Amino acid sequence: MISKRDKEFSLIKIVEKWGNRLPHPFVLFGIFILIILLLSNVLNKIGFGVDDTLMSNKYILVENLLSFNHLRELIEKIPDIYIRFPSLKIVLLMMMAIGLVEKVGFFNALMRKYLLGVPKSYLTAALIFTAINANVMSDAGTIFAITMGGILFSSVGRSPKLGIIVGFAAASGGFTANIFVAGTDALLAGITQEALLTIGKEEVINPLCNYYFMVASTVVLTITLTLFTEKFIVKYVDRDVRFEDLDSLSKFKLNIDEERGLKYSFYSIIIFFLIMIFLTVPQNSFFRNPQGSFLPTSPLMTSITTIIFFLFSIIGITYGVGKGAIKTSKDVAKLFQEGVIQAAPLMVTLLSSSIFIYLLNKSNIFKVLSIKGAMQLKDLNMNSYLLLIMVILITTLINPIMTSGSTKWVLLAPMVVPMFSILGISPAYAQLAFRIGDSATNIISPLQPALPVVLGLLYQYQEKDKIDGEEGSGFGSVFSLTLPYSIVILFSLIILLTIWYHLELPIGPGIY
Image (cartoon, rainbow, N blue to C red; front, side, top):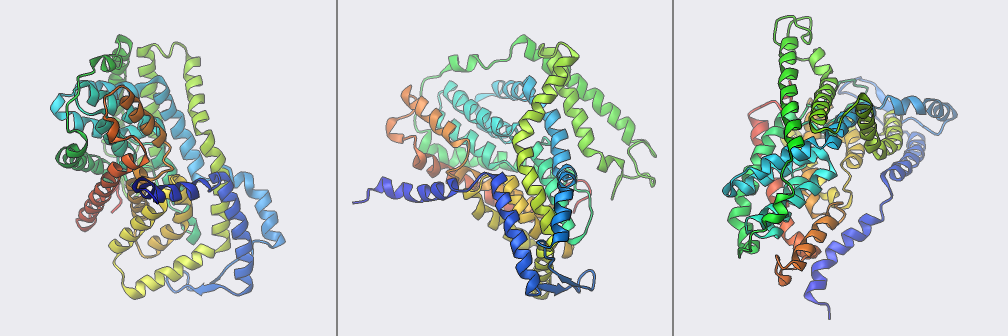
């Protein structure tokens, strides 16, 4: 007889089993490259194409990439394909600077200072806000949010289980929101830009293309998740008050060096923005275009990545000097190197994914499909808002078995981005819809990298008798709580997108 517990885990185990069978993204894109080569040969021979009445007024046929000419060209161009891939150059620069800031401990110190000074009544909101923004530190940010959630809630006599789940839900489920610009913004923007080449369109997509919406999402999710936690989840988790564990909290307080580092970095941020005001505000200033404005394009818009690099570098260096982590110029170079090392796994994946996207563009397969799809949607007179919702829902379905956001976007972008562009919808909107779907279901995937940490911390607190043994600390216990959070995040962001879309507000600088 199958027990209730076995039934509870059956679906989770199936998803986990098949998800774990997926190869590494580098190998996965290698397989896709072979498929594209073979598919282009077959589709070319059967004459698969489209009469393009939307853009070029020409008949577009799928190219046979297995011809000697195409294969020779591919082998010759692989170094250029890789080096010129937009995501590579953007991510490398961003990861150098963000890696510097992270390695000296700026983000960690800033968030600890903010959290430890919050009154008890605002603790849940403060934890959620911090956890959402902690994803600027990537996976380390999620671990930070989970750990601090358990410690903070335990220190004030609340269930550490609630703190851990709240930190996990906000950091991983709220991955699309942030008031900071992160490496993810640069990576996705580069993939979006490259996907536009499918239809021969060259357009610069900068890392700030979704920034206004990201900031608004941070505020909205902080409010909705706080209310949901305190009005509903508390009834199931935080039923009883435990003793206050102030000893665990004390070791996270900032020392004198960290306080000095934050002070130095604060001064550097003020000086940086004063310089930026001088370079942008006066008419005909350095970052304005010849017409004296910023939109649709200007040196400011095309230099966003470089500006962010200098901002984070200055913050990291001044904090490191104040803290004592940077004593000589050699230390700065070493920290930049560590940022590049942190980007190494991504650089490996980008090799095969850049070749995959190049071959997609060269084959015309997705160009033909995008034009056919756009023509069908135009005939159906489908609202662009419904298309956004479709992208969100498709992404939420894929996400539990493929947790890598960049891998999913490399697969979806060559189809979605050109189709949106042909229909007159900004590619940045396609990227935004993907990010909403990608975030919401992160916390219900058995393949989520932070899940073992969540389970480990729950077991640790259970051993210390701060969580009832009967509450459990397994997969089922965690997912029974993260599923409601996933639904709240998804609907909160869809409602925000609906308001944003119908009010025609910009989702990023100059993007409507």
